[in-house]
Length: 373
Image (cartoon, rainbow, N blue to C red; front, side, top):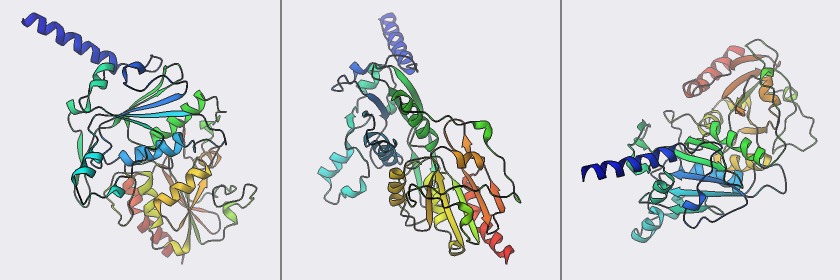
């Protein structure tokens, strides 16, 4: 009896090993996901522990994939490729259960964007087991991140697969939680698989800048500017200009609610922009937030962030990023911030911004302004 049990356990463990090694180039077992069916489209399949409010990155995850790939706003074309987005959730549908059991349930607290996506609730983890993935419920909670208001549990990262029309795996990401550093490489691979012309960006052209250097000039492009605009950065005669580079629109662990600023929150693109926008010194400063995107995405991103003092720039070909040493060879902007005075001289340069640096930035800017008087 003991020998039989041992053999069965060994076979089960082998199935998990096989699934855990579903890597790029392997065939994804789509047929093992019930009711998914066959498709001639690209597929983004996300195995996630939860889409409920206890998962602090769920709403940003679903919102970013919705805008980028379901609606096709990541593509500067009127005919974007068709992409199927599928969520396999290792939990029951708590939103539906909450709505039925609580008279005080407020559906507006559900910020998930699931229109056009397929959601499969797999509480028992049968699908996970069938393809050899370990259900999240069998894992331990990873860590706790303290915030200024409370201690909140950080649930485990989702596992994301990009699968082509022939079910071949093009990408596997075991740490997906809507980070711009992960979202932009996914976008890049989707475009490549869709045979959309790929940008050839020469990483070696990143230009190192320091305080005292003349700021590189460039044409301002984005949702606030006409297609044929020739307005340039240094045409602006503001006393100071702030350039903040960030990886991607709709990225960061939490879809923000900016009634308050949490300076202990995890570093996100949203938090980075928020701290600039809420700077009380902005009446003397023109601030620009820069990423490589589309105008449609940036317009929605501005609405989501509810910023009032920032101009969003679209660096489509990463030319601005290269000029300011912000481009990352993986296909996104590193977090960087520069301050430029009215003479076009760089008076603050930080090409590798941390959240601690960003939290201190209002004080740094105040000192720069006071020093100039």
